[in-house]
Length: 424
Image 1 (cartoon, one colour):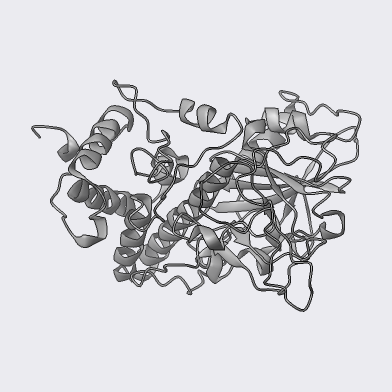
Image 2: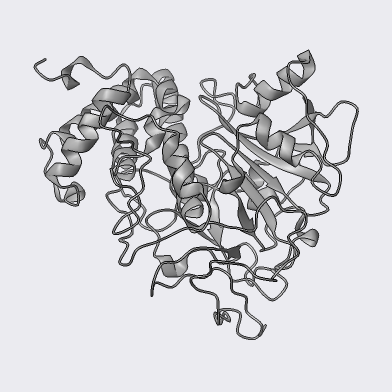
């Protein structure tokens, strides 16, 4: 992979962590030094999906096909990275370095799975990628959109002026943001956006995004723009809620789907902060091993466990329904226990997931955390799921919830501590 200077402003590619409901236990404003001997971000080889694909392209084991008519490498790239088209999200705010080509009539398309995301701009110069290495966290890449004899990913090594800050827990990260967009998609307040996750009130979410799906009388900021520059917070929300089709809002000729599914968007929101919590906690543990400052790990672990158990999740008051196949295909990724249950199963009636424990517990990133972190997370989860911890923090978890999650993990998560096993 070629290394070249990152173009400033990739802040809109995706995104990480949340601003609302910050937990006092974790110092989210403290940055982790990238050049710390225990981290060395950007200085060591990475093992993420894009790096793996790059090696396969070089060896001839994989090939990127170019599709004429405007799609270019996108369909082949998604196939090689195992990204489903039904994960497509459409963002029309000008929050990418390719912003001149983004607007409500030409939204940027995003596709994601558990460890990689791809952004595509109509007529863009490059495809944008963010990939997760289990230890080093998120790395950013671009792929030239024009046809080449040998397509090559460029690793963007100096993008952290946009992608490392308090909104990403002080580490390189990704995030979902909500803005007040003008009629052409320009954010009304430069440099000011709300980072959203599963804790954020729905009324503050998705400004600058297209949203397809229904949620009853609940309101959100999606599908809306402000027409009056003197009143940038006054979004024109007429006809913006409960859309099952985007109609003629833009020319869909060169898009792989016409949906920006509400359930996929909620899933991405949850996943971004969960990913950053795992990387930040792992980095803190690695630094602490060198410095001996182990006390900070307890706060990190508590913040992670609280989030992964959806303790502060925004309540759903009316059923939510997407319009793509995402609600069906996402749970099919599993794993499932002997009763056919999965942590990926959606509820969408009163909460997001039927069994409220983050599916990211199955990720390579979770397993790659230092043993001191994994052991503390497992102990805290066990205490909550077995009812030993009955604190108010986890009061929303019923006895049935705790029992079901415990049973699912026992069937599906390898290498659980021995004390998790019945009768041990």
